[in-house]
Image 1: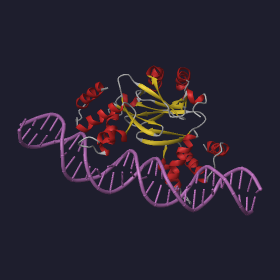
Image 2 (image 1 turned 60 degrees about the vertical axis):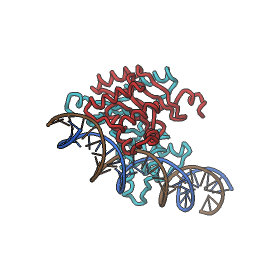
Image 3 (image 1 turned 90 degrees about the vertical axis):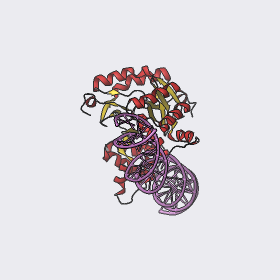
Image 4 (image 1 turned 45 degrees about the vertical axis):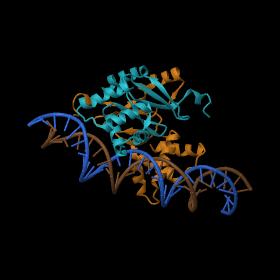
Length: 144
Length: 144
DNA sequence: TTTGTTTTAGCAAATTTTTGCAATAACAAT
DNA sequence: ATTGTTATTGCAAAAATTTGCTAAAACAAA
């Protein structure tokens, strides 16, 4: 995970952007929060440290990372959450009833991806898909 | 479209909720805005009318309809948009570069849906999927 | 109809997110 | 090292969204 951080720090400069301490701090925070962090969680984790950070910077920087495809943004049970995109893409199934989030392996989306390319010439960003629905537990009545 | 409205008005009561003028107004607005409306567009359309509506009510009611699966919420180019869910589900491909939104027919998702059921016992709400990526135009250099 | 119960709307305040602008600080080039 | 250019930050204000609470009004039942 620290591995991604270093890689991404380098990429920021390679892609022509400036590597600021704030950007590194936010990447650090996302790493240590370990997936699915809200903007506020990122802010609070950094705020404790010596030169604190501004909220606007957190929002702007998260958007910046999303644009660079280093971070994904998704909606989970009403909250907007951010996560570092790793080499092997992974996706999420979110239960609409109990809020449970489970992992969806990438290979399930391979066929869909191909179809989109063939039928629409569309290259999907399939590194952060979030699908909502009802999980196994809630269907069997456990979640009620 | 007015067809869905009537159907949904009935359903609100059938499902044990109250049919208020505000709920009907918001459904009307969503119909006449014809897909992909923001909360603010809904608000402004209704605000013009005689007994205006409160913004909080618009937000709460849209969330209520989403919960009832009558309306879908999705992110399109940074904006949160709402759309009435119709009998035949349809999905969207949103281009990350030019913002273009195109339709994705439901049958492309049939296989994925089956796999989710089989592998995870998960019943996906596949009536409002939004997939971001890069459209054909932008790939051929038109969008630059 | 009228009455009672309970959900829903409106209001105002809180919270979250975005934006414009001036000051700061990366980075390149000297 | 120093300087210049330009991206990025911080700040403060604006805009968007959510929330708690009370009043209003749907609906069921008399």
